[in-house]
Amino acid sequence: DGGLNHHLSASGNFGQVVRKNYPVAIGSRMGAQALERVSVVGPLCTPLDQLAERMELPRAEVGDLFVVFQSGAYGASASPQAFLGHSSCIEVLV
Image (cartoon, rainbow, N blue to C red; front, side, top):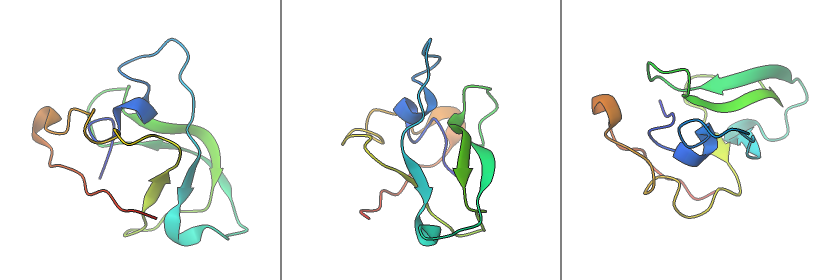
């Protein structure tokens, strides 16, 4: 359910010239062998709502947690959480 409104820096801070992928994972599938090349996008109506681009990840299922590593303590608090009327995120310590 999350996107740039929950983790602005992972999406590229509203259009960085060079956007980098943070280390990411599907939290409940860390040891999975079967991977596929995917891009992870959020629900907002903007092409900037992309959290990971062309990364090898296991297939995600409903209820899985998408984990963004090494992103600092301000992921949620420095993001526009109420953007377009969306709800706040839940941060989980892994």
